[in-house]
Amino acid sequence: MNTHVNAGLRLDSLPIGKFHRRLVLLVGLGMFWDAFDNKISSAVLASMLPTGFSTLELNSFFLSATFAGLAIGAAFAGWLSDRVGRGFAFQFNLALFGVVCLVSAMSPSMEVLIALRFVMSIGMGAEYVICYGMITEFIPRGHRGRYLGLLGLFGGLGVSLSSLIGWLVIPAWSWQGMFVIGGVGALITWWLRRGMPESPRWLESRGRYDEAEAVMQMIERESGVDSQKVIPTSAAQHEAGGANEKADWMPITVLFSRPVIQRTLLALILTVICLFGSYFVTGWMPTFFVEQGMTVSKSLGFNAAIMSGYVAGPLLCMFVTDRLGRRRSIVMFGTLAAIFAGIFPFMKEPALIIAVGFILVAMAASFLTLCLGTVPEFFPTAFRFRGGGFAQTVGRICLIASPFIVLWLFSNYGIIGVILAVSGMYVAATLIYALGRVDTSHEALAQLAPHGDTDDLPVGARQSSSQG
Image 1 (tube, rainbow, N blue to C red):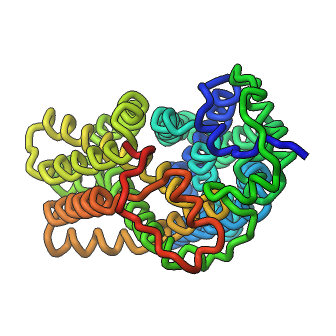
Image 2: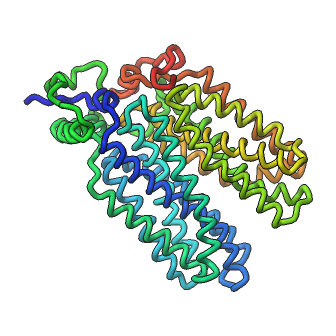
Image 3: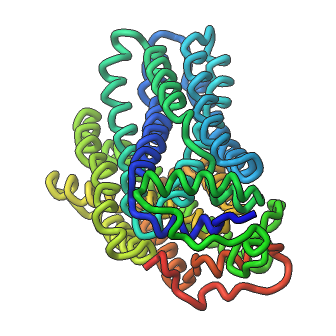
């Protein structure tokens, strides 16, 4: 039986076509609603206090449940995607948080809402992992930077519009209206996604060559490419090919085996630091402004102007990343984030505070987008989503402790101490990533896929062709 196989190389050689644009739109819509639902906490919780529906203590449990669900969802998405398939996981997580979001609007008490929020957050945490992984699975290497930036733009818009819609909706329909909007939006996107095919990379890695070929030919037709121009090889030849990935199921322990551990550690460093940096610049800015003597209204005004960088950063990624390469772009954005984080505390004039803060947020958002989008490339198809999911799980767990770390730094060293610590983290991540070059070529990834138990992979010996 003849089959074309080699889905990875064929996908990477395609021009961008109708399939890719539809995929990115559907992935981006999922990211939008994920960011929207994740960000409704501040407006919703604030509106509950005057009515007596919640208390400050219960609000804290709500936030803790959100963090815990995001961490579990990231781990769950990795296992489900690698075990059952990208397509099923792509739909299941969105349906989960969409349905639970609607049910949450009918919560009779804050305690019930907290429990539902935990389940909802599992779906949200899974969506983050799957959205970034789907870009790696389907988008050709030479175009991934642009579409990762577009994905980050969808997320940034979700964050921005969540605040605006909350300002309009909550006074009219109370906090329940926000959950209804988020749930309906997620379920509409789930319905639109129903026709998306399974990843041919995953099908091939599981030995389902005929199905992989059928999906590949469909994608090639929608990209305007004649699949007959690809030299066919048999399934037996495919399995014997040294540069191809095996169909074996790998346990999670493969992430800690000798050939993979360096990649896992680098993925953890990038993910933890990009999440912490983004959390700090988006969550703590108004508090620090108030501590420096600003009124609350002025603080929120400054914050709104600065947070527009969360949209500008991914937009910048769309235009520069594919020209520079993802590795150079991550190093550049990390370096600029460190520089502007370091000088931000010393800004006194309002115009400089807004300008420097805007650039800092834009760099942090760019660094976040590219790190989360590039980490899945470190791992072969067989355990790609578990690698990305594990890194995000650890990152989310670290976020649970981050408020206490920030408060300790602020209490002992003031805002300068906090900002310089964040700057130092960006410096550390940038240097480690610049020096620890990870080869993500097909040949290097294929060495990790078969059994992961013998030869050490010379990570750092070669510069990745996809990273620039």
